[in-house]
Image 1: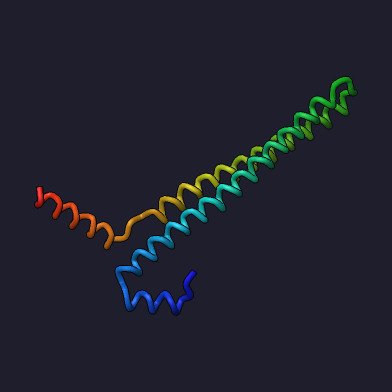
Image 2 (image 1 turned 135 degrees about the vertical axis):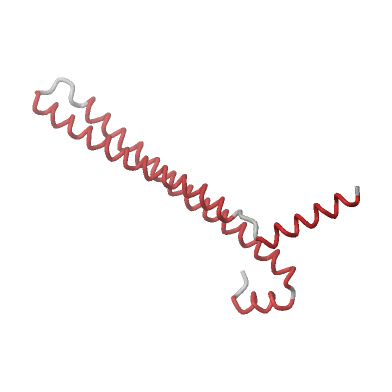
Length: 127
């Protein structure tokens, strides 16, 4: 990885090569952001599964018990369900963040788009 000073020197001496470096850095950022958000999404998914299993255990453990104990088990199961749903919402937010970061970091600069347009015009003329 280049330091800021090395990058600015490189930008001044070779602007075309610097554009490639920036594009490469953008790709690295996109991959890193997607990996980080995906990891958080997976962690929330595991936490939601754990909460749902806890709810199921509370309900299955209440069989054959008295009414007040069943009511307590039912309350515990609802708490587990709500915690699981909260984790699923967080998981969805992280999945959305993966998509958003990929889309934002994948945008082409105006200069890149103009170069592509020029290339397509010259290739049409050659035909």
